Length: 130
Image (cartoon, rainbow, N blue to C red):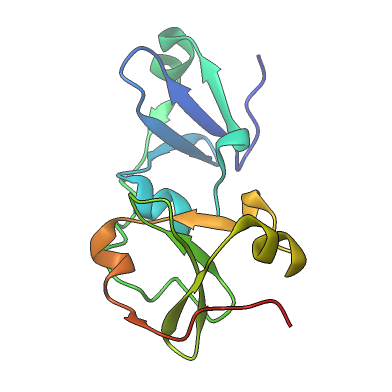
């Protein structure tokens, strides 16, 4: 296994995710930060603890607990099944998979956020396909 700058590593068995920044591993503190940084699970590699232990540890990435990393057009979902698109500072529910597909969205565009982040956005009109 060869590490590259920008790689993400999943430490076994604890499951701690790290971003590789230069020669240092930088712990990703939570799912909100993971999502806000633009990471996706297909970027995570499972590696043995020996690989993690051999690399220097850097400072923890700043934790994302607010909405500043999210912008109009972003797709978000909390713990529930509903997916929303951000529009004008509001969250607009996409009511079904047909609408989701008709609007050209893909699953890898959806940011999973903590419910407190989701609830920071007021509800807007339901998003319908044009």
